[in-house]
Length: 118
Image (cartoon, rainbow, N blue to C red; front, top):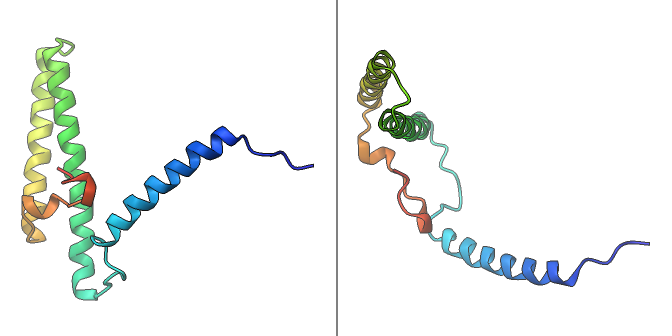
């Protein structure tokens, strides 16, 4: 015999589903109905997405490094190597943005109701 679901779970679940539905409705205005797979723009779009993710990770790594330095958990040599690595990564990001003709604002994607990514 099938188990009957707990009514408390259904109640909370229904509220969550209604909230999700409202959020989905608000996203419909910002998301296109179809994916534009024009071969002229696919490469740029993919490069933009990948570089955005890399930039987000780079910024997170930089913030974590600053926290570790401020906490005193790194030696002077480790701090030096970490700084050199982060600078090299930032330089490479600039080269890639230049290659794909992207700017910092191109990598700051609008996530609709969540705001800007970076």
